[in-house]
Image (cartoon, rainbow, N blue to C red; front, side, top):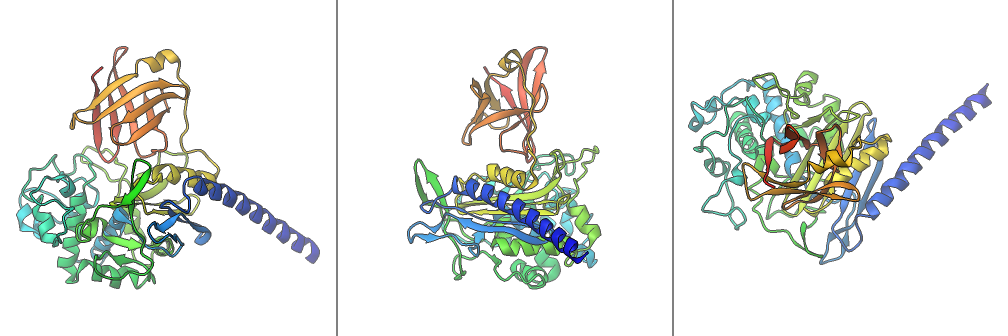
Length: 447
């Protein structure tokens, strides 16, 4: 009997080893095909059931010094910061210091009468203008630091884009306000609150609030691509990101963050479930965002995630609850293929394609060919052409993407899972494309 049990155990271990060896080779090839020792790169960590199953780094941390990236390299995580801000607010809710239905004017009087609630800020449904998209006399790229109040002054007097709670539009201003509220309610600076209530309890020893002066061990340099060459990222004061995008971390600390959340050690199950559930608008529509997390249930498998983009950096952290799978990708180039890799990596791990497609006849495809103009910004266009691979969309400033059809009119761009698109027809003629990604946008056909 003992021999049989030992043999059975050996076979199980051999099977696990074979599967691990299989995905490791596929992942190695995927990253080596995208990064070299002479380019910026990626630090990647994958954990399943709370155990790290893949942890490597590819590419260069500093092109001038020829320093390779390592798993302990520290990156700007940009908008993944919003998860930490959201959880901090929810911790204060749990302690009875904030109510999700509190009006914003309770904390900042200049927003009196706008009927914005805390839950609107958390879910990007406030209607506020994004401070990073407001034209000011002072360019953020200049070497100037900003206080939270100075950031808020950029947008506080501007009219709302829509009534709070009636629409979703991703807005960094919402999370700047939340950071200020954390400071006002807790009596601590934003960075100090995170350190005391999140970083220290979870033993996150390599996560920092960004600073232009402090020496941060293992911090990497950020880049962007100009033609065939890489250049240093444009300088931005570390104060600009604040509670919307001001954190630095490594992959191991982000895994501690996810494990801490999923074990409910820093936030109750009830509030975490609310954070990772789709927010409901006033008309009952569910949006693909909760409180600090994108919620995507349209794929073959549910995922909750967030990405980040900042000068010289881009990032991704995604959790697949049905598989207890967590994927972290940190890049030190703003041009890195984050969207593609954030799909390909979990596809390899799960063994399932995330972009199902159907074939359309040439006659059906023909009516979609043409040029489309963004109604809210006429300078931006999508040009759709027919190529050997099918229909291809050239999006101004973003490159080319194959169209992956899910129905006769609905499609996604290749490697962009969070953009849900649909052609709108009038009879047999195409009038526009509706794109739902961080809001709803109409691209009208002009020829």
